[in-house]
Image (cartoon, rainbow, N blue to C red; front, top):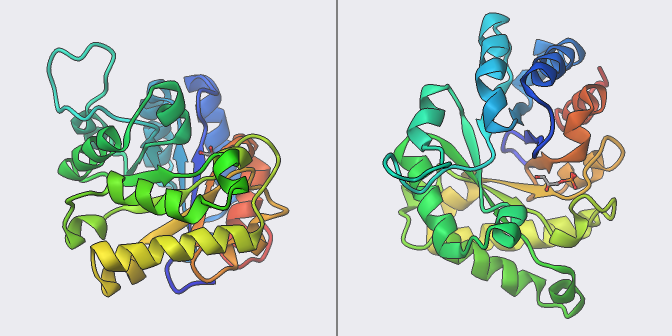
Length: 262
Ligand SMILES: O=C[C@H](O)COP(=O)(O)O
């Protein structure tokens, strides 16, 4: 376990309407009492249309959960039909915003340049970008995964100051482990997360590298999270499928907090 406070982020992807979102947050709050939040930060990342409802429950019940968004526009306002500004997300009280998720890189052709522009937009509005990187199976099998991830990291943070990099979270999500049930081993996660930290020291500085949280994502569940977040350079998890099950998400958050089970 690292000295950085772990972060468990539940990316709901395109699941749950706003009524289902309210129910999930209420169940999660019941399953994960306040005492855990000293040792772990837990955030939910719903679809845009759920955020106001999630905010209402969290604020109304004074929950310690935070929430965020799955994407944002690189622009602040204007003629960008269908896009969502970071200013709007900040106004809604979002803490985090995911940028460069592999599903956006693949399905929406987001390049490192786009991811960088979105990271800058998040920072402009006081949001914490969760910057995602990750290799596909062919790259992993060819042994090029570390170089690939570091190139993606450097491209996605190019030109940012050390102070700006210090305000990010990095998520390593091997594409072959996302939604497949094929989780990377704790060694695999540690190898890339450690390399990410080394690269952060190079492009920012040692103090920044030591403070930035580097998450693992890809088929994380209550059974495997302990091993993964127990590694030195893995500071939490970006969780997809298991974040839709409030009891399991509460359990894995409690495990990341160091226990006991709720
Ligand atoms: O953002 C979350 C990741 O894509 C992981 O999804 P998963 O836990 O369903 O594999």
